[in-house]
Image 1 (cartoon, rainbow, N blue to C red):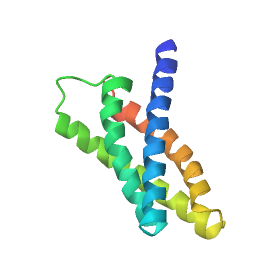
Image 2 (spheres, helix red, strand yellow):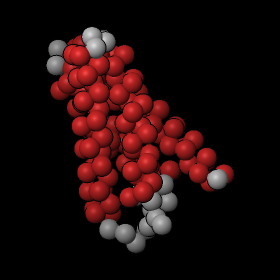
Image 3 (cartoon, rainbow, N blue to C red):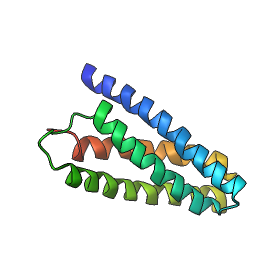
Length: 128
């Protein structure tokens, strides 16, 4: 149980950093370049996934060192694409259906996706 708690804390730190990357890139692209919030949210999410992968396999999850890293990355990206779909759906529902500002909507979407990410990465990426 102690190991799981430590892992959740590390995941939280990585997630916190990646949230700021995701959020910052999204706001930058939307406000400076006037890119639609759904497009900028998708781009920012992708950038943060790459950083998250590197940090997750380095600091959070114990991965099999002998495992094919390309296969591991493909699984990570596949799971992340599902997470992106969840993110985009949450963003659309919050902004378009509920009328919540996209910057606030992103916080809620991130919380939902963070839980999904931890559970799926622990199940499919971590060494058993």
